[in-house]
Image (cartoon, rainbow, N blue to C red; front, side):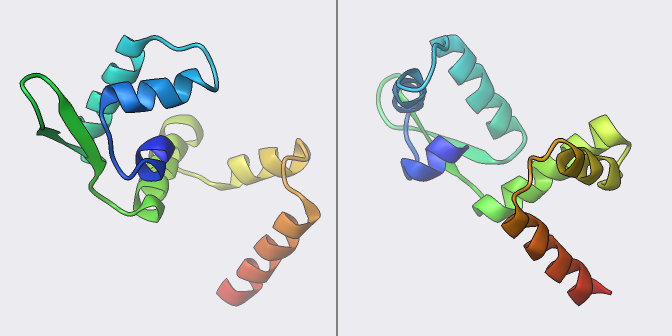
Length: 110
């Protein structure tokens, strides 16, 4: 999804080539993942040529991130965000700036 947003849409080949610059990945893996994102409603697919499809986001990045995070929380943590946050804090994956921002958000919500 990040690459589709960065490319303002594109073909499987566009996304594949951008990913290939970062790591080894199979073209079919990219195609499968993009079709899964179509099935979930995050991307739309339009035929642009005799065989090519162009994919574009159907939702804002923040909406898709929220949806994916909620799906992940449901699958891995039974819907609770607390274990994820505890894990991030304990593994020191959050910077002091991140922690300060989270504290401020918690204060606002309290």
